[in-house]
Image: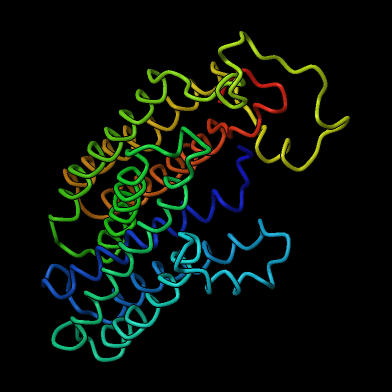
Length: 315
């Protein structure tokens, strides 16, 4: 599949924003963060800014972005529509939670309820985003039981990295944000590693023989191409990344997404002052870069079965 930059930015930015919103929505009512005005302003502003920026960028991939609102009406049958509906609905409790925190410095009572609803909405929206891809049976690499947990865990991990960076910048002495990163990063990337291994080990399920139903007669090959020049399907569905490049990019994703943020988070935990804050900020930046590489691979390694009709041997 063609890894469109707008969709990569959407899934990484919105994923981090929803992960941060989920953690902040839970941490406030649980008393894990101080309800100070500027801390709330930065945390809620960053999470909602990432979400809004990601959602806006997703429309750039559409042929008619002005018609994007129409997709909201198909929520009964479309995960894309459900994602849009959930994204819009989540803004309401998230905005009210931000009002309570920023203007009244309150995250208890009714404001706590808004925070919990915002956290639930964030989790549900990431779930719907993952299901957009996991529900596509025509793409074996996406129609996999590991797709959903990968999206959820990486969103949480990236949100935790941003949360930890802000906590250090505001010099808030809360150990739990460091420990959350040390716990989440290995789990999230461990699941991603298992996902990659499943893809490498599982046999190909779609071939020209299975697609045409002529496998009993022997090998099926293409006599003439369906088109004399490249078309939309070939551009969007026919993108391929070489195996050697895929392996290198997987390693880079692990280095930037797991190793460096993990080491930097430990460094922040063991130091104090501006060195700790710098380490936490660098950990968030490195983690974001790692997830961008991971998400590029998620699209580039996917193979749509339609390409079997354009000469591919397997999908």
